[in-house]
Length: 161
Image (tube, rainbow, N blue to C red; front, side, top):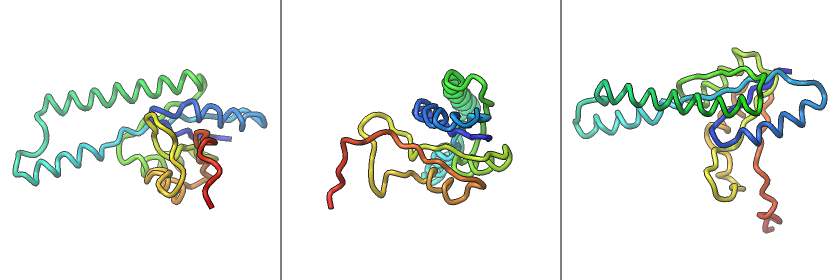
């Protein structure tokens, strides 16, 4: 079984636990995917153009931004390799939702494991806004089954009736 794990910088522990449950049957082949999101850079360019400023940062600033993105991606993939030493690292650049779906197809994944959204502290959300746009897109468009892995949130239950 080929399992594609989608890293976001906060979820490698959750993904490791989920694949551990799957590996009781047969050890899966694990792919670790991290996508450098180019969306924020494009949004900055659009705002800059809106106020009639020259488009794009200077060449050196653009280079610094790309270096920082590459370093962050490498850190996240290295963290994933600590949990999955035999995992295959895949790094993409683009819109995460589209790159995940395309990587799953190209890598011929049998299962995609993704978390609902990156959580930077606080309690996990339950309810309509608990699944982000990336996870929702992947669930709707992936070429294979998708396992959505949440952090435990038992303290938020029972749900009011």
